[in-house]
Amino acid sequence: MSSAQLLKQIAILVAVAVVGFALYGLTIAPVDALPLFNPQEDPWGNLIINAQDGLTKEPLCDVTVVIPETGQRYVTDQNGQTGVITVPIVSDAAYTSILPQTWGEITVLAYKAGYADYAVFHVQVWENQTRYGPTLMMFSNGDDVTGQPFTLTEGPHRLWVQQLLDRFRNPQ
Image 1 (cartoon, one colour):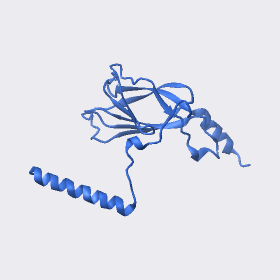
Image 2: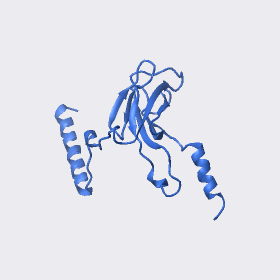
Image 3: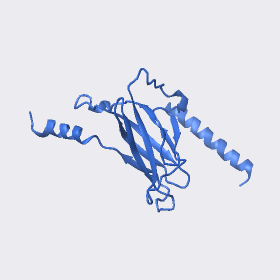
Image 4: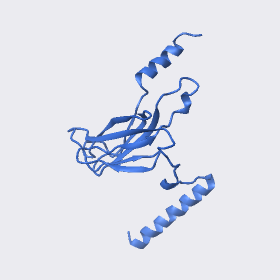
């Protein structure tokens, strides 16, 4: 395929995307348009994220870690760790009327060339505390992961789950 043909195909794809977004009223917010998070005014917590090879458990350096809620990017060091990441405390409003959560939840995305992309949802963060984790066990694209992203979802803390179960165990 010539450069001219490639440019023509790209132009067509862009035009189709623009029309599709216009028809459905969709927009893409740039990362810098995300709400600003101010740790001096907003509740916050800290994370130090670890990245390891999923088979050897060796630390992985140069893993790009993204916190979508803030739009910030971090890179792991030779020990497979990010520095301290300050994040907003975002509670899951779905539980407010049932059993309020005492922590916030964020999303962690990770990328490294040669490894499957990684996403962890509902990562728990407690106000004014530093959490050492999560540990991202990343798998090489050669480890039969077929290029699919690796996804995990953290469950709520066991004590909160027990309170929820106890609350609804017996009919009132």
